[in-house]
Amino acid sequence: MKQLIILNLILILLSSCSGKAKKEALNPKAVALNNRAIVLVQKLNYDSALILLDKAIAIDKNYNMPHANKVGIYIRKKEFDKALAEIEIVIKKEPDSAENWSFAGMLHDGLGDTLTAKKYYKKSIEIGDKKILNPAEKGHIISNRMNRAISLILLGKGKEGKDELKKLKEENPQNNVFDMFLNRNRQDLINDLFKKEDRH
Image 1 (cartoon, rainbow, N blue to C red):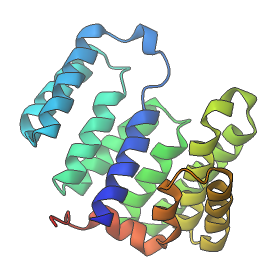
Image 2 (image 1 turned 120 degrees about the vertical axis):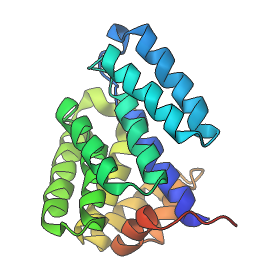
Image 3 (image 1 turned 180 degrees about the horizontal axis):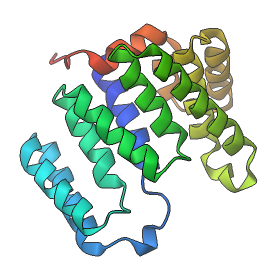
């Protein structure tokens, strides 16, 4: 069950950070199709959801949310090569999202390309460092710091990453999300992404 919770949290972080820019310029038909697809995903009707997401992408090439949702579907279907191909599209369209880089790194890692994974984690940390210091990102400071901490763990700097998570926990004692990652190491996080869902 813990693996499913962590996977869902990672997917939420990914999708919530995709498509932040230019929300006012999005095509309403594409947004409606994406929203209908989300309902289908909740009903586990993945193939129909993918059709709607592809239609949304065809209508609005700049809308990243359908791509992020496709990543989530491919992860749930255990089609990791397709998930990786889709997240690479997301990165090209939105290269300043640290979450996208770290998630793509996890996919590369799990598929055996650890060298590319390390480059992606480092890129995620680099972007995270800039965002943490940027006053315009003040409203997202907790998520930026959390993503940076997770990327540090994934890069093999577990102590540094967990120290940051402990600080976040101390500063936000009411938020239990940090506990889920404090008990996970690098390999646990990769395994969480690639394991079958726990049905208990």
